[in-house]
Image (cartoon, rainbow, N blue to C red; front, top):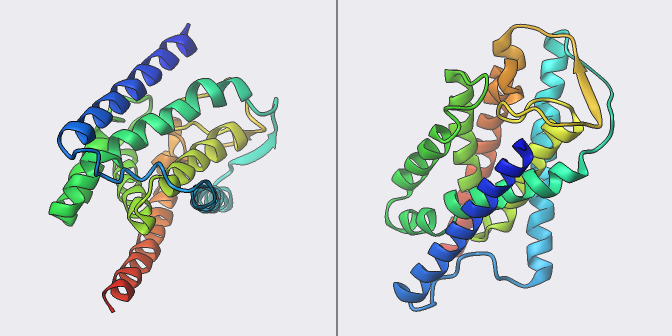
Length: 238
């Protein structure tokens, strides 16, 4: 029942965002707005793969830091939850990226970059405020995640990098490593977590996104991606 309700919510949200975006671009921008989805397949696949690599690297790095500093350990689990991949993770990522890195964010970005990043990341964090096990640290990390995903969009001006990063982030932390994903506990995972530690180091019931180690990982990633984007902008001006 939970999976059905969640799938219905995500699909309804995805459809609503898609319809609203399509109508807005058609009427307001006369079909001239480059949303960042409809690009050559080879370019989309490349940027999506880069996003996957970033997401895996960041989560594995955070998980390693948690393991080294706490008693959290990983053991073999029941396997990859393919049904949840289709019914939960893919619709959720597409829904959230279309909503938070899609047309509204892109419009704001052209008008006022600092406001676009802060405002959209804040709304992105508030969307998770009612999740299981949420803390102020967890919301801070979700806010930083919103900044990171915004930078991922700006890197190429397309949505495939942030979609890949977001999807790999969720899949690596939950279905693969067996951690909670923003408070959500899945049906199965490749590995399961055992042991524990201070909630601010492990993330507690919210998952590793509520850990201070993920704060550090996200800050480093934001700085690296911000510098990459700044260098790209300078090259484009020359």
